[in-house]
Length: 200
Image 1: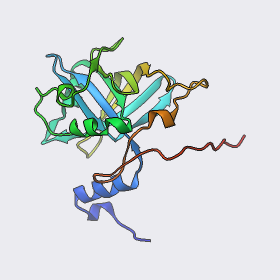
Image 2: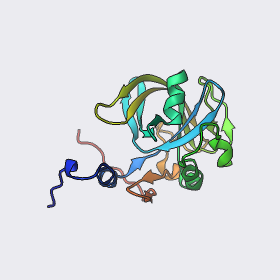
Image 3: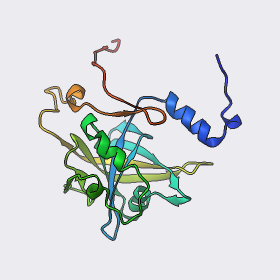
Image 4: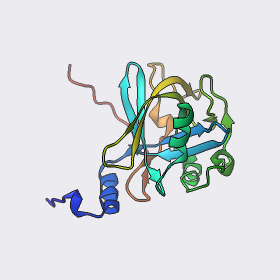
């Protein structure tokens, strides 16, 4: 075994190593809107669900050139966001929205995506996404000794494309075909799924 102390690595190298170890990671394609009406859409792979009652998820957002990314700025302004799930077919559009753009740039328009209205929050969802979750921020936590802020969001509404919800109330992952983040520029698609019942 090779033992590596992360403090011995340049921060960028430690980050790249960590993100190649913690795989695969789901991608939160987060849509937000500023108080001035500016729309933003950006992907984050420091993302996961953290609790079921009430349904709560988290995304971790870093700084860009020492300033809050547009996603964080917008959530700080109005406390609302939408997590859109990225499927294989939307990979190119998702990747396009990962660029560093000025605040005024509308990534929906840039990527040729349809902004669909939500029921309970102001930010639009990506109409092409198979699943979208309307969220309201419940807590923002600045992570000690890092440039990251964790946004905890309560899920207020699920939007699910016809044909993705199985009779048992779960999403058919093989039909959704989610895209997952690996290290560097690598991504992964879903292999055939299998069941493994928990011990009783």
